[in-house]
Image (cartoon, rainbow, N blue to C red; front, side, top):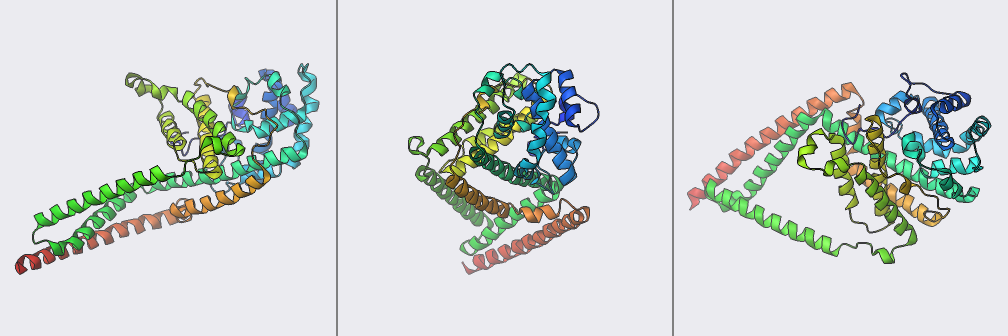
Length: 427
């Protein structure tokens, strides 16, 4: 079911939580009765109820089943906006979730008198619907009692941030999926085309240098001298850019930026603990799933990206949250122990970012997304992975490109020989 970090599922459905052999969807009473039978806590049951609402939304709005979600994750190729749309329309589902209180309160010993409103807010703002129940079951009532019921204004502002996260997380996840599927589908031709393009560039540069040489040996010597010189200049420029890049001074950063960075550190530590097998000795490496190694490498790559402002920090936060979700679901599926849970949950009433910062962040992320899509030619690639006929046409197009470049290379090789011959005769 899982064969790459880009295709690892980030969703663990309700029927899997109940260990049912066949996929199913439930009404409130059925869900409550099953939860009691399985011995789930009040919070765990409410998380299941919330997931059940999400699954109902996917099915009714996007025609996507829980089984499909389990296999493919919450980001659907044709409709990546499904989960953000659910949260945007959450007010329509809230009354149904609140009615769960009728089914649940009498069946659990609720000495702490936990507010159902606070419970639902806690689930959304900590995105507990993304994780398996085993991951959230460690939350005890004392933590929930510390979580205050937010006013509608406070909650809506925090909800906006969650929706922003879900929307852009889905978009960047989709880009990763498209790149992965495109590369996998056209791997052989794509690699051959890339090699031919590099070979063409090699001979094109030699043709430019050929008038300065009389023999093939002289040309090769001059080419490699220029190559070394170019590499040294590029490396110096890269180092200079890194030295002069404006890294955030944590002490001078805004409170919002500091909080994003701190939350990212917590996520990174959680990922590290849940990929700890990768850090063992080489003798033990053979039994480690490749997915954990990929997650570990990706987390370290993302974590070490330079941060120059809130947008950079938030993009890193998006990447870390996505990786953590995938690795937790992966470990649940393969019955591997899950580490480090409690530190991840936020019981703070304080708003993560201000309204103005949220507006600026949204605009900046939109710009980054458009740029990212253009650089990766996402709309172009998407055309050829969703349609078999288009895929076959693209296979043929790539093959023709390879043949065309091969002809260009052959012509350049002839031109180089002619130039060298002329130069040798003139000396």
